[in-house]
Image: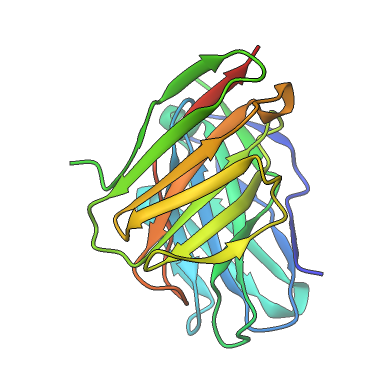
Length: 117
Length: 113
């Protein structure tokens, strides 16, 4: 069955510290992977995505993620966290009946990030 | 202009009522979606439409009826509201059905009392 897990429900970091949010997926076909961010009371904004090619992808707001097929992981990183990064982060995988593409996105349970000034 | 817009943003209603949430996208996309985010922030797809045609229906109670009058609009009507329907409902769109980034609206917070 297709699924996305995010082992950390809640993470607290100090401003300026580095950040890594973990994501593991289970999907039998080519994974199309995403990270979205949801600020309090807001909708979801796409941070970055991986479809193919370079396994290290750069996103907006200084975020990057690395796809590791052997570990079925797509961890999100940022070298220096800002207070405005406090939000809910969702990892997601695109799935569908067509193995070479996807027509819907399945989300992980989310990781809540708190930033200490 | 907001790319995917939903109204209302907040809705408080009593059990048993019927309510609708409207969604419009001005991106020229062919595909639109409704997602539900429950109290634990878990997001799950409910429906997807492609060029006004229903293509995904994820075992949602038939009290929920989506309607797409044209490909820029996807409305969600909910009959006989129950306490468990309290959630945030997100509308989203993508350029085409397959392999395209999904863009989300800002959500509609529904509270059933």
